[in-house]
Image (cartoon, rainbow, N blue to C red; front, side, top):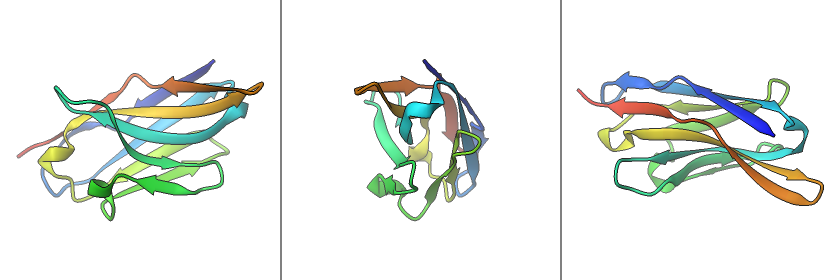
Length: 119
């Protein structure tokens, strides 16, 4: 089992910045890709950004150039630096970890952290 704990959400004005953190604990040895997803009210949960254990990143088009995902493998922590925030970035942000354990892929999720962009 892998336990993910997110932090760093909150209320910010348009154009502002926030940094989300997600710390993994438990059976972290099998984790490969970590990422951030978000879900706005009435919408599906979508991928925002992901990063592999070797540092390869992937971003959803609307956040390219504004958000940066990074990872500290020694601390089993992934970060999402969000700049130039827009009201449409408002959502619950979820941390995700994919792991390969004895040839079985497993998906783990954090509890979510609210990000609200509003003046």
